[in-house]
Amino acid sequence: DIQMTQSPSSLSASVGDRVTITCRASQGISTFLNWYQQKPGKAPKLLIYAASSLQSGVPSRFSGSGSGTDFTLTISGLQPEDFATYYCQQTYSTLFFTFGPGTKVEIK
Amino acid sequence: QITLRESGPTLVKPTQTLTLTCTFSGFSLSTPMLGLGWIRQPPGQALEWLALIYWNDDKRYRPSLESRLTITKDAPKNQVVLTMTNMDPVDTATYYCAHFRAIPAGRWFDPWGQGTLVTVSS
View 1 (spheres, rainbow over the protein chains, first blue to last red):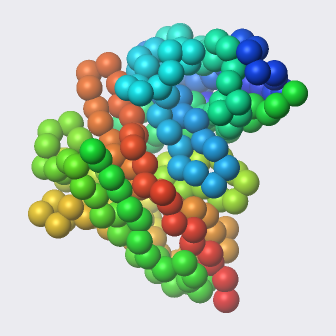
View 2: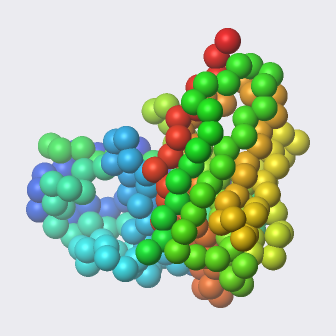
């Protein structure tokens, strides 16, 4: 099984800050890595697919990078509506898709 | 516009079988490279992928739950059904269905249904 880890598990940031969240896979997954945003009581929303492709309708302040085992989600200029939990997900293994444990972004 | 909606019981007893239905619109599950998946989230915990059915009826299950899960599709009715046997209180979670798409460079779930909370309790 491919295990996914995220760091940090939580962070506090201010509006306007640049925020970086890291996701690491236990083995190489090429660019089969997605990022989702989830707000309390809501379904997850796809932000980034294939490691760096921005989903239609998602603000350009969100960006993703990486390949292999190490990936990054960056929010350039945090907005009030960005306070949420962010999950990475690998879809390299077609037998078993795995989500990371999540990173909660809170207001400082 | 793609929409999905989960339906099923909100409360099941331990050992019972859970049957959830995802009714969708805006796409056909007969279209190549598409699929529909189920993901759950216990209260306050992370997302957990459960099952996926592809346009060609190929199916994938979470290995630790494979013996308890069955996913089927009714393409003309635009529905996918997930059954989970021998429910236990630890299966209490919000269950989501989600549209799945695959391209050579990636595979992802988008959009998702609103989710349905299933509580397992006697």
